[in-house]
Length: 158
Image 1: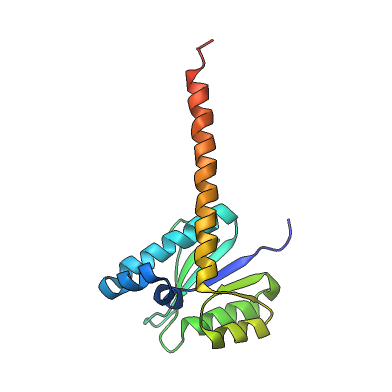
Image 2 (image 1 turned 45 degrees about the vertical axis):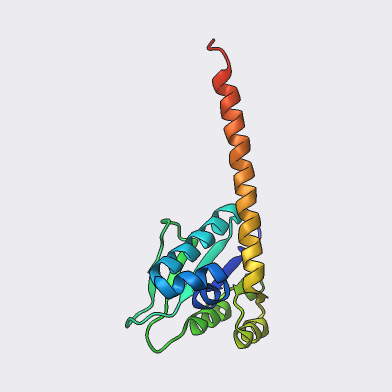
């Protein structure tokens, strides 16, 4: 197995870029974060890649949440005085292989910075497409599993 790919998502930027999240964000920031986290979690599960969703925080320290309990899927909240962009840039810079990092953001300056560090950039629209395709693949696999189970259940008992 080669180096692990790491998708870093600029949470606030993506929430403002995706129309359905932008609308939800106006009513309920927590629900918008949760919906983005679910989309990112589905991508983590379907693609078997490390995913970090990074948000601007307000606390004194970096906050790390593991909503699924997996070390490879985290939500990060920057400490006050730092932005999500700062955290993303540090993670890419400290990566053993920046070329295996993919950063999802529509922030042009952030894209230029992480590309200069050796990472790849992904637009919010491209991230949405990736999430949708991963969801379709997962649905297809579940459908195949369901059909196989139904076939097994219909077999007469020995």
